[in-house]
Length: 157
Image: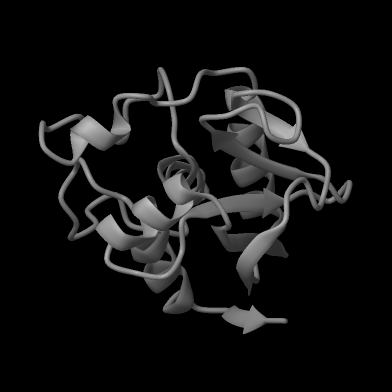
């Protein structure tokens, strides 16, 4: 089972991300089997910038939305293998500019939260690599919408 934790943070940057990504979410982490959260962040909250494991919870939030996705053992191995291979990579500070200039979100040199998780789901064969989304925009809300429609996915409390 894959568990994703979408959130709306309390800070002004979280509110700005949510506003400009057409929704009410600003971040997504993967809940790891060890109970920690793995994601890409631009700040030092919970243990450092970039792709890191962080404690759960690592910050107070205004809103949380969880999804669980059923996965085969092979899909789980590919999903988590991809994520663990990304540990230590930097945060994609050019991501905001990518909404204007066309940075390909699949470039794996740096990540922001939702492009990291989307790439892991693609690696596991759970999302099509021909997503109908601009190649420079994978927002937390867009990812939550995609995840909500996956076979075996459901929202949990």
